[in-house]
Length: 259
Image 1 (tube, rainbow, N blue to C red):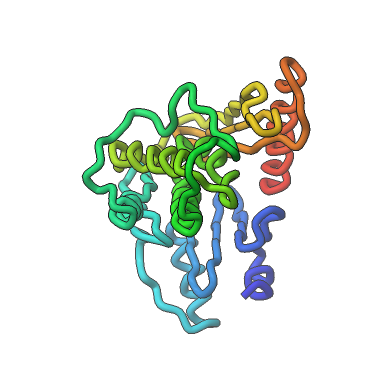
Image 2 (cartoon, rainbow, N blue to C red; image 1 turned 90 degrees about the vertical axis):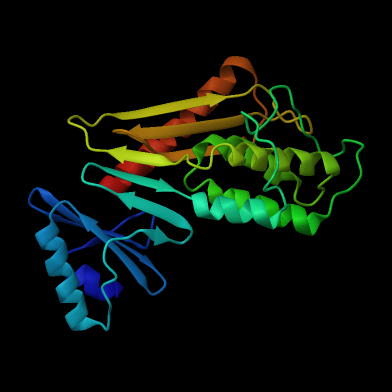
C-alpha cells in the first residue's frame, strides 16, 4: 500500500506515517490508513472518486460511502461544516463505571484541587483506575477541555488512591453534562493559524514541576492540543520561556508536515 501510494505521487507525513497527501495544482487529496481501513478526503470530489476507482483496480476494496463513525468517533457532515465528537463512547463509559445517574458538574477539576502520590487516603483498585484513565485518555481525541485534568490523573496509575478515583469520577460527572461537546469545523472565508500556550507555577506537589499546555486553531476549531509536565523545575518568567519553547517546537513540526 505504501509503495503504491508513493507511486501515485502521494507524500508521506514526516510526523504521522499513516498520513499521505497529494497536491494537484490547487487541490488536495488526503489519505489516512488504519490497519485495513482507509479514509479519503480532499478539496475536489471528482479527484476523490478517481482515486477510489484507481485503488479498487489495484486492491480488493469496498466503498462504504461518507464517514459517519470511526474508531469511537462520530462524524457529522453537512454542506458547510464537519462536527466530530465521541458522544456514544462517552455514554458507554458512564454506563461502564456506573455513573449514568450522577449529577453533572461545570468543570472537570476543582479550582484549588492539588493531587499528590501520598495523600493519606485508602488505596483504590488500580485495575479500575487504569481502565478509567485509559478511557479518558482516548476521549482527549476530541475533547481538549479535559486534556489537562487527564494528564494530571495519569501520573498516579501505579499509586492510585481513593482521592484520585474521586477526582477521575469528577471528570465523568463533567462529561455527563457536556455529552454534546466536540470539534466543529465550519466553512469560513479566511483561515488564520492561532496558537495559545500557558503554564502553571510548580503545580506538581510531589516534585515542584510545572505543567505546560498549548492548543492551535486553524479556522473555526482546535486541531492540535497538549498538556505535559516539564522535565525540569523552573519558576516565574523562566517557566513562560519553556512554555514558549514548547509552542515553537510544535510549530516546527507542523511546518515539516506541511512541507
